[in-house]
Image (tube, rainbow, N blue to C red; front, side, top):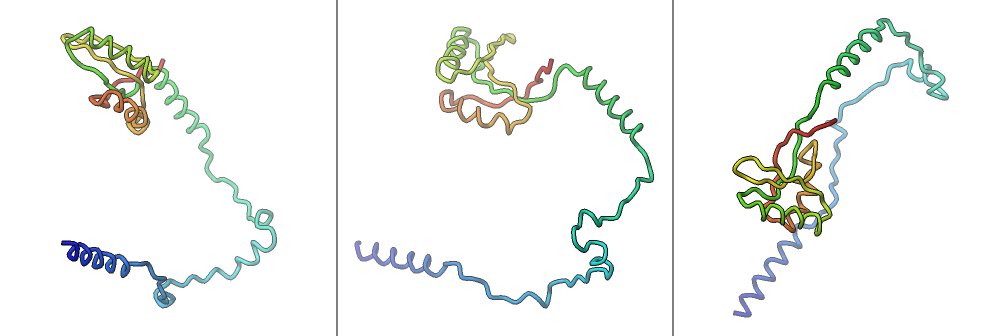
Length: 160
């Protein structure tokens, strides 16, 4: 049995030894594209390139149109009361005492303030408001250490 184990270890080490990275010695100049700069490039940008850059004057002025669009977007944003986002649901069930104890544990153990909702017939304990699921992942991992059944749920996040 020992001999078989030694043979297996030797074979696996030989395979690992053969896979070491070696520097690549390959000439790619034949397939590289060739670029020839325009003949006047040296004349325009000789010396300090910032001083010798040709000045281009704008032909179309769109400032008034852009301002109008930005103002209309601003007015639409003032009307919005919420945005789509995410929250972490820690508890969902029928027992109100368990929901309260979950909320208290969140505050005591993780220093996270949770919201408790009653949507008939369930009690829900949720924590955090996140605009993207990527933002919520860090807190979700932290909450899952204490509450293994915590999940990320889509929610409308109030902005004002």
